[in-house]
Amino acid sequence: MTTPDPATTAVRTAIESDTQHGAVVPPLYLSTNFTFSAFGEPRRYDYTRSGNPTRDALGDALARLEGGAGATVTASGTAAVTLVCQLLKPGDLLLAPHDCYGGTYRLFESLASRGLFCVRFVDQTDTESLRAAFALRPRMVWVETPSNPLLRIVDLEAVAALCRRHQTLLVADNTFLSPALQQPLSLGADLVVHSTTKYLNGHSDVVGGAVVAGTPELAQEIDWWANCLGLTGAPFDSYLTLRGVRTLHARLRIHEENAHAVADLLDGHPAVARVFYPGLAQHPGHTLARRQQKGFGGMISFELRGGASAAQAFVEGMTYFSLAESLGGVESLVAHPATMTHAAMDEDARLRAGIGDGLIRLSIGIEAAQDLVADVAAGLERASSAATRPPLAVAAAC
Image 1 (spheres, rainbow, N blue to C red):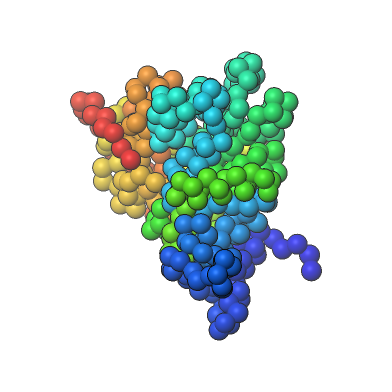
Image 2: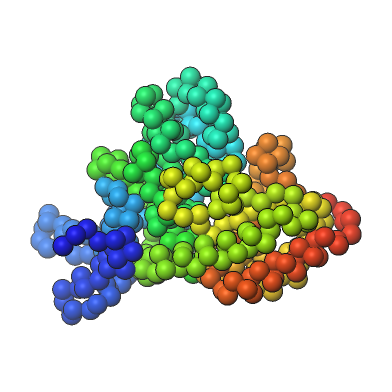
């Protein structure tokens, strides 16, 4: 047999693995503990924090899809980020994107402020700035590509070459695309991080994360820290996420088709100052995205000309977009990063990253494209005619 297509792997992983009753779908093991076969003879599993058959089935699927040596499933995406940070020691330098997800930014800054490591935020699309930062001898480089929320594209192969030259670990957050559309390990990354809450689960009913390692040694080290710190995911969450993974490729095809339709509407609309979607030919990272990705995904951000008042008018009255954080579910979502996903960043940091008060982020779902386009068009009309309003208060968010 030839090597199966990733879509086949996503569907078939752990299917027909039940040896007791012949169940097609693998059973859910909720047990917290497992008996020893005899005194001093543990079985493969002894305690669910350390290992669980259901969680391992999901980890096996993710490792295969990413082309990794192993995957550790965590309780959340932030837990996955925290887990990777255990590879850093006091004095080690982490180079992180200046425009990364607000929760990641907050975590890196908070851990660095306690002296656990040092962090420097860099525009990773600026080749000269990135090269200059390597003179500081970083231990780890963290890449988001596409970035959240501005969908900037970072050249993974180029960064990987710099990392190899300086013996630096390269970690790629692949949440926005999933392994269906991008495989960072094949481009030179050492570790891949996911918030499995997003596209991998795909139904907005599970919080989870994962770290996929490129070598057995890294996989073993990550597993050890996950067990030590108690960061591993729950069996039921793993069961639901594995169910979501089975439809990943089918869902992403519709996500992307719908995203193209919405992006075409936004492109050139008088209410819109800029559109951030790599699928548009004029996007600065379009050519690079075509080279290192298998698709452009279902995330779109755009900047409204009217600032906060226009953003408020746009989101109020949406019919098929729910005003909520998170992304990657089958339902469409609209977010205002400055007051939601990136509220944890101070205003100066947000502005340096390019996250203004008029920025809107859309997670395009799998509803009918014409309904989503009509909903966005109506929102743009509201934004165009919005009266000037007081600036929105920025409150800390999850």
